[in-house]
View: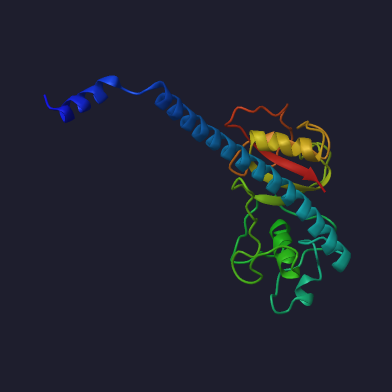
Length: 228
């Protein structure tokens, strides 16, 4: 056997040294740590985005009221004010009619679809981004989890998670994100306070009963709502 073949055989038989194995384990550890850290950063970003959505919509509603003296969507002066965009007007009764997850019946919202007119009026006024004419002007924007953001009036105690009045809802929120949002914005309890939640993904209807508590299973989704 020549020297070259002998060296190859010796290399194969010797396998990996302890140093080489240690290096491999360190690299694997770094990769796993990076993946886990990356996932946590994504979760933190979603929490921040959901909180910002609630705060931003609250500011937009208040600013619209200060400027026009009506709630967006319920604004009965919208048609006369914006002749180029020509949106439908609300009835001006101080209540935004329709469900948070209502969809527009036509290319643009029509009178009576005030929860869709809400977004159209805010977009035309420049308080939220989006199209101001044609299809999609009243479409609810998505949140960081791909769910729908919308508004709904609960006019009787106990009807919408115990709220009475204008409610901002964000759907399909992952359990860990929902819990953190409630802790950061309110009392961390899904049944009490200004932020409440119910179980359910796929933009569920706003129900009457809040979830007993937040359970972080990794698969639970919540409809998280905040009283305006």
